[in-house]
Image (cartoon, rainbow, N blue to C red; front, side, top):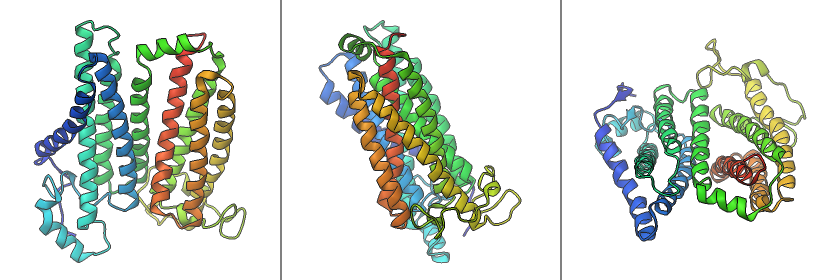
Length: 376
């Protein structure tokens, strides 16, 4: 493969323009649907739209990773210094001819660049949210949103962009790819707070429902922390390509406890497929990564199931409890499908999306518990 500069900022402005044009479409849709509403209602509609598109971005990021398209364009932010693969046809063709099954092909380049376009569009929408929220605050608009939330979200989406760049330039370094996925979940959480935590929503929650016990919020926080740990474990399995280390359930390799190398499995800062010492990562290490995810999944499902049982006993949380149960079922089905069906693409993408949806539901519970709780 020909040598390229890992960072080539020459197409940056063109990429920003593409992102702005893509962001204009959902922004225009919100304006047309909510044009006669109050500024606050239009702003909330934009937040919900941005949350929806960010969830789509997380799904497409999983699709990009699972189709091995993360290095479809080996430089950042463009593709061989161009704003689209159309300008890099010669370079992509040369790389594909040299290695037809390699990381650079025409289809993989397009998948990678579409992911970057979507990320840029989401960043543009969050920028609009931030400017709009500060403007409403300066005008003392009634029920104006707290502008620090979109500001924090804007900072975080920039951090995500940096992790996206490192994912490419560090050649799919497992720890970086894992942090990039967790950062996507954090972005969903930030937007979810703003989508369900508006002053009007909190006031409605206090008016409609009886106060909830204080400990429910603590239980939800503990469940969210465990879910994040489980998501990190799942990302570690995926980024190290350890899904197929066990091809049956509940056993693995014909045993309940196959040979495993836990020290190598838990070695975080190392290149893809290698140990920190530069040796090839053993199959026993991949097995340990896989089995560790299974063990943690058992604890996570138990805790989240218990939380759902608690939530369904309170009117304010019944809908969230139903979503929680449904998503847990989805995660179990897709997780098992990844093992016994040989890691099918659809199941793998849905498994990643299900984890993101679980994060959103738990954030919803936390915001609601604060709105109707005795300690609010």
